[in-house]
Amino acid sequence: MDRPKVVEYSKPLCVEDYPCGAFKAGHLVQDNAGWRVFRPVIDQQKCVRCLRCFLVCPDGAIDKSGDRLEIDYGFCKGCGVCAYECKLGAITMVREGDETDAGL
Amino acid sequence: MATNARELTNTEFLYGHRACAGCGGSLALRLAMKVLGPRTFVAIPANCMSAVSFLYPQISFTTNAMISPFPATGAVLSGIEAGARALGFKDYSVVGFAGDGGTADIGIQALSGAIDRGDRVIYVCYDNEAYMNTGIQKSGLTPFGSRTTTSPAGRNIPGAAGRKKDMFEIVAAHGIEYAATASIGYLEDFLKKIGKAARCRTTSYIHVLSPCATGWGFPVEQTVEMGKEAVDCGLWVLAEYEDEEFVLNRKPKEFSCVGDYLKKQARFKHLKEKEVEFITANRDKKWEKILKNWKA
Ligand SMILES: Cc1ncc(C[n+]2csc(CCOP(=O)(O)OP(=O)(O)O)c2C)c(N)n1
Ligand code: SF4
Image: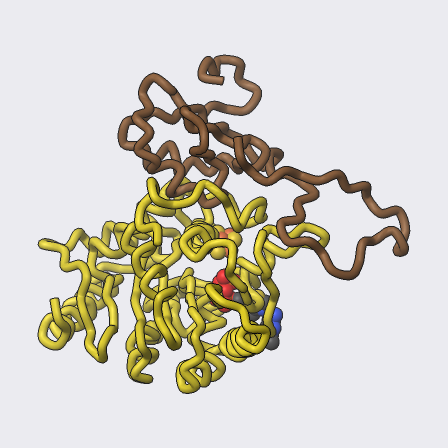
């Protein structure tokens, strides 16, 4: 998985604690995982690595650097565009908390 | 430069943004950044994309990026370009991402100025057809019949009463080096056009239709599909302006049904048969002109 990571950030308690001045680009302090109701799960048996899901993801949460496509669940919002666009139906949207997602 | 998923870099230059799930605008920006690469300076005026990418202390762009005043995208791009040149930088891109309001209404003067000066900048208008970030108000690019908070649909008025400004032709009328329309429904075409813009020596303009589930009212997973259907039914045209000529990129053999496209969206749900016919007739008039005057 080659995706930007969240850096440690302690919530400021008073005004002086707030960081100010120049920021490094790509500064992530919080993920988006909590937005998700349904989680996309890739069936690696069905996937032919056509990269359609990688292309259409508005969040760039699908990583293609390894042998298998991997989803960064820290930043996937569960929009379902990948599952809708996959022509082979290799991606299923599974309700969060549901234990039946064997693909994980 | 990458023109398909296989060639695109795996590296993300816009990551962790807070756009709505399935946001078309964020997909357009993400892919444009992947084509342009790490040596890209970005300016974004007030709009959804700046609101969701610069949430203190979080910054979702991994390259140099800043928020410009709402009307000033074109001017700020010129300034960045002049600065980069003065510092002797080589092999870089300067890109702006403005919404439809930020382009066709409040930002049109600064854009016109930048094209007039011929500065080597790329101006991308991601068009979600209303002022979305402030809660769906009508812009100069909101199409006829669309319901927004400032063009409500009632007994006497069927939503937005005006017509959508033709920004592509307005920009082309400047004699710009390169301008193109695109849609997130046809992503390879969009990637190719961003690549072409990056190779220009002067100003270039890309107008990309970017469906917004929140403002248009359709299921979030269908963002890319909506962008495709808009093209397939002929309401959105894929074209380029190059060497002072208009070129049509895609001519559907047969248009899909305009009514089907409209009725999938809450913003058009109220439209009556008569209005759908009016929209269809306007589409046909436009296409007649295009087929007569543009290169196919
Ligand atoms: C001078 C000025 N006027 C008004 C605003 C308020 N404002 C912030 S974002 C926005 C809407 C932008 O709409 P658009 O350019 O279409 O982009 P979208 O939000 O739809 O992506 C407005 C009106 C502002 N920031 N600055
Ligand atoms: S309101 Fe629309 S354009 Fe704005 S972030 Fe949400 S989906 Fe994207």
